[in-house]
Image (cartoon, rainbow over all chains, first blue to last red; front, side):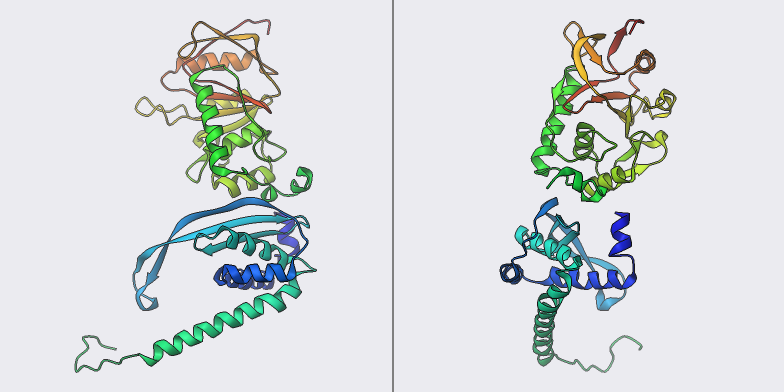
Length: 160
Length: 207
């Protein structure tokens, strides 16, 4: 593990970059990843370090982003770890029970660390998934904002 | 892909191919070994393993260890690769002190003095004792030590390569502690055999 950290994950920037694409892969859809997989059809072979497996995680939140933490509910999460023949190790955690989704996300994580594949995939895949995610987030925000109701009362029971 | 290539770093070793079924199989073998002391149980090579462990001791740990388990690796069995492997696949804690462990992983070279440091449990909780997993070269059902006790109809012969008379002397003392004491699992590449604390092992001095 130490040599991996030294070469590809040693600097903060590399960690940040990887966090970014892992986060995007986690929010991507399975069909989307499958389509990119078919498009690029990487010839790399890989082995499973950890077969895709589904479990539960407790999602916790804070009202309004502060205050006491409370348990929002449990969510199914599938994780997978793979090892590319070229040496990179990919991990993934995705919401839901789709094992293929977790597997593809792990393989893409490993490929994105690869010198040869990384820049290509980042440009062609990660950026476009990110754009789609941002777009749908904006659309949702606009939709929600249009139905926003402001309540005006004389006394709100709070001093701000 | 060859296993040698994967051996580059511990984390790049795969665990069980079918985690649930493989772990169940190993669990059944350990259960059978414990309930029929000295009887050899064949164990398939189910997972890759770090160089410092052998295949069946690695499989036993993958099946039995989890994040609540403290594992102590004897210096002979210890390596960064083994630690990475265990942490990644089981989430267990690899600890530095044999006094607190639940599983002690040793081989025939390990200093016997350390065995006396392992927890033996208490009268109220004899289950809070360590299980000793000893990696060995070979296990045979041939005359060596003669085992007697619960789970054995008359007696059972067991010969384990490179296990010394001193070990069996230690084990005799261990038996005296019953209900406290250490249970031992011998793990060769393809077989396991267990000798729990309830067993009397008779050995001849000419071993």
